[in-house]
Image 1: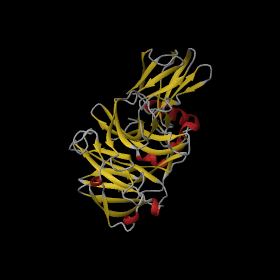
Image 2: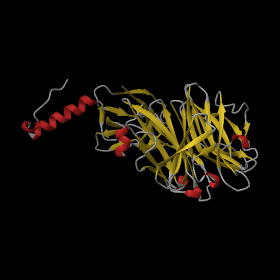
Image 3: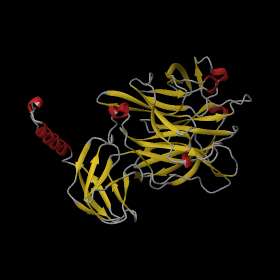
Image 4: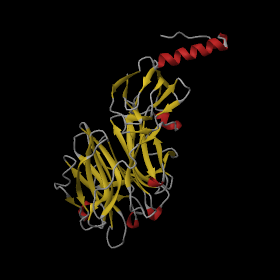
Length: 412
């Protein structure tokens, strides 16, 4: 326990000493251990850096230590004539995540379908297959899938065209296991899968394209959507039966496309995080305390380079009450038909202070839990670790010698 001090009576020198002691004590329980030599040939891998529990203060302030995944893109389309993969959504399942995405995943025709893949840790992906065929629609894409407390799954996606009017509308699917939707693998989408929204005046001519974020709380489904026929707001509607919703009103008065909304419970209070894009070089987020009235959006990230210049979708990666980062679909061309999947992770900040005065900082992630420190020769120094805001000191380790190719783990 640290006793209270009368700060005005403490000299400047002693104040600096006190602050140093407090900073050191804040990281006393954190340590770094050498695991093996499984790092890259010109880098050091540091694992154990994944984000901790959701911290609303960090998101409100916009102080996020975000790192692009070094695999840029994270996931390519499969080989085949038509290759355009985007609209990712990750659902926590057992010891990993089931990834859903809309795409032309190496198929013969440029019709959007919904696919799935399995990943344990976003390092490798397997079991890629189609789960929703487009059926009578030209496209079924922009999926948002959730897992209910019962273990069942629900998914909302965009279907085009609604009828002969050339409009986009939401469709919904149910599954007991995340694979068999409406009793089929794959399920062929049908007009009977279309959802309805009562009370929204613009519904007869609504063009809801790629803006259908689904949330479930206390037995009620929330659908966040936008309407290109009346663009400028993100709306919310609610329903108990998943097929028919009642219009609630405006959730965010901004001209952005909503893709994902998640709820986090922190110290008895609920926080809602909305992910947004606009087919350009940025992703944004917005916060709410009640899931209905969202604060003005803030910048989450901008494109890293030309490969992800046009960002077309975002899906949060969540593990319980932790927000680990985001997957996003993006491409290099404005036609939006050559997209790939990318990732940016929220992590603790790791530096290595070398005895020769250099500072080596981890700037590229490998999945949500590891970061790479560029290093091509042995150096001596110490690790310095900060929290997910990149500012709050967690630990300064004893001096050690780093070798290229080592794997270190941050432990608590």
